Image 1 (cartoon, rainbow, N blue to C red):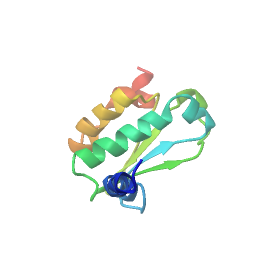
Image 2 (image 1 turned 60 degrees about the vertical axis):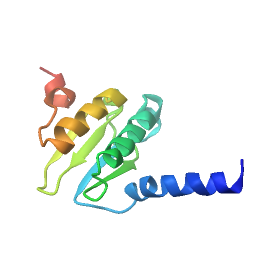
Image 3 (image 1 turned 180 degrees about the horizontal axis):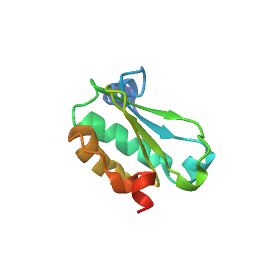
Length: 122
């Protein structure tokens, strides 16, 4: 690979890396403990990063990760914190569900209840 190709990749990825840094009031936190990673959390995290960046929401949302939160049977787990103080916990997430959460919750403001612990219990 040429140096110019590496520079191009670095430039393309710079904004996505910045999306995962910092602490905004609106944030998406993907649990990335061993159990989460083995359940597919890495693909979920990447989907959120790509979707938030692609939707032009990187100025208002941070996508970050945390370790295990002790609810292994519900992994991959994603928590969405909004500036109004609300927290929504999504369970058993997949990349497809992540796309839906971005469309309906992040962009549209409507929690996708069937992907929450309470919604799944119904």
